[in-house]
Length: 161
Image (tube, rainbow, N blue to C red; front, side):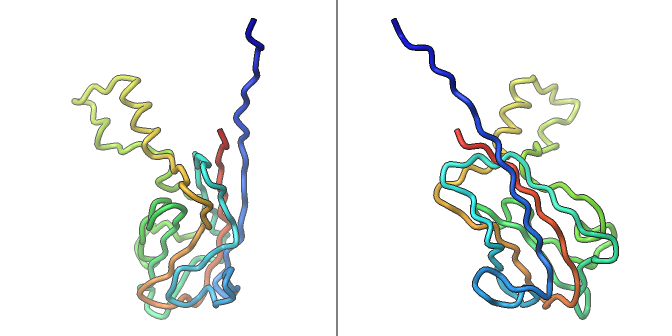
């Protein structure tokens, strides 16, 4: 007779504080144009199901001409949030709670005329999870201009199968 085995997914959460005048995991200034490791490492084989971030009131990101872009990455460039300029109207670097690309379905697939099935919806969401192929460090990439202000708290949720 086979033994009954219990299998449990273990959901884990990580919070990291990123501030423009801090330093990254390599000791470089977070304000500079570069990819900045946050020191948060996601284990190999993790399934990242959600990434959110909060920009506190009064801590909005700025640069000399408000032309800087920021991107968030775990497995491959911009997989959490592709580079977006900080100077746009209602850009995702303004104060408030923000979602990312992780776990969010591609809405163009779900236009009403497509009549998607529940299975198609689930498959599309699944394709938006990030599965790490090795231990990965959450990075924030600053491009175009150096930052002059800004901070955020990043929340990463993942499961280990």
